[in-house]
Amino acid sequence: MKNDQLIDTLNDLIQISKDGEEGFRVCAEDASERQAYYKNQFLERSQACGQSALELQNLVRVLGGEPTNHTTVSGALHRQWINIKSAIVGKDDEAILNECERGEDAAVNAYRKALAKDLPSDVRLIIERQYQGVLANHDRVKALRDQVRAKKAA
Image (cartoon, rainbow, N blue to C red; front, side):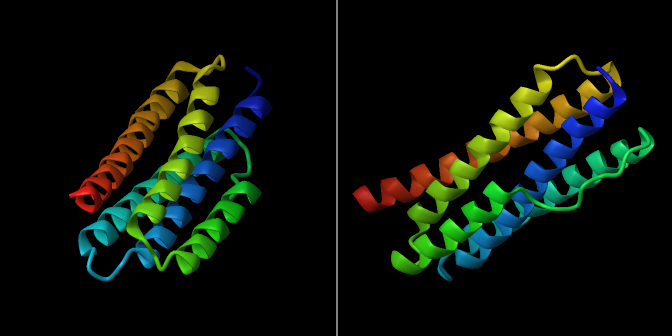
């Protein structure tokens, strides 16, 4: 893989990580007051996504590139959708968790796409480690959503 292509791939992952950082922050703000546990989970996930973005930005610099420092357009639209949906349904926890899961689906797909490329082994190790974090984020959000659904059904 050419260096420019590698930097582009890393910048794509930086953007999706920044999307996660902002998306989880918005979800923390929108979680109902009675769900402090959700807020804390979302804030932790936001910080983890931010750390992933920083790690990737440093890697881009090492490769001689200019790291991106912004989210994707689709990520911004997704956060707006979370805000609109939260306003309409009264910050319903299940709706917020559904939107968080949808955001994490996008992150899983972005990391899978990157891992399908011919990456240098040192870069692949970093991306694979971060991918495991993305999968864990997805699973946590899904488990939280399933808990909310179970409480509603009870």
